[in-house]
Image 1: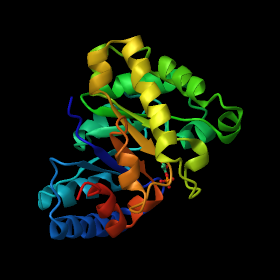
Image 2: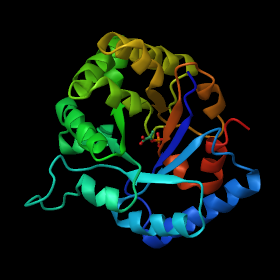
Image 3: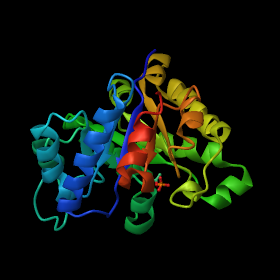
Length: 258
Ligand code: PEP
């Protein structure tokens, strides 16, 4: 089954809306100059909430071949939830993707696998695609129990979803020890866990669902290492932090296939 690679740039809490506009312009020129072909890889930017309207306008105005999304969403529809943002608000802004359960949300905001599953369901019910993050910390990797740990996360996160919903979703395997550290999992490390996730999805649901779900690797992905990571059979894309803030570097990551 052909799965279109998904290269997503998570800007985290970086860039105000003016800087966001500049980055989209530069990324757009760089991709056009390099002959980017969206059928070879889907490119997505994930800015802070305050930048989304600007990103939408910049992309729509010039029909830039980029999609965009949000870094988080509420489990509630509306009401007295100060500081939260609903799925309906993101849909209205034209978002296609929402990252749920990033390790920084888990660490600083107490998000559990159950909350991540609930958010993923909300995102799918609203017609967007969740990028569901999972991954182990360094102590678990050192113990050698990382595959079991990640599969446990997957079982709990996918519990509220139907097979059809899982098939439309994206799972991002991001070993926490490789995020923002410059420490990259080897391509074989990435394949070990991404392959195990796909087999687990087949056990939990069925082979058709496992063949359809896209599984990304994330953790210090750069232009210099993206090809080897993308050459792994169960790696269908990358979730990129730091390198997505540099338009030329991110364009090379998006065009890993060239
Ligand atoms: C991330 O935050 O999801 C990430 C992978 O960051 P970085 O690429 O900077 O390691």
